[in-house]
Length: 42
Image (cartoon, rainbow, N blue to C red; front, side, top):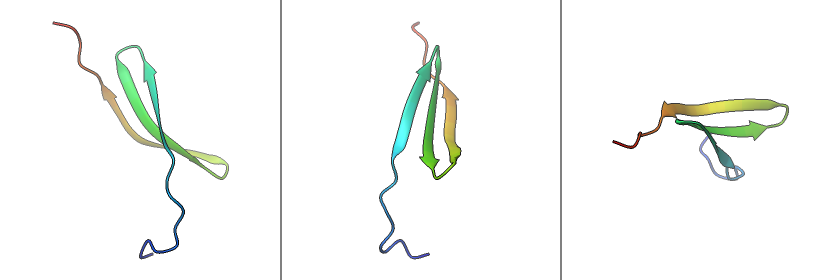
């Protein structure tokens, strides 16, 4: 796929406690794109 004519991705962000997750919903599936521990106050 060369990307031409493709729909733009709707990447969503979810914050839970000290974690952040980036994900997208396509058709009947949820794709987790990135999950990481956020910075804590020092």
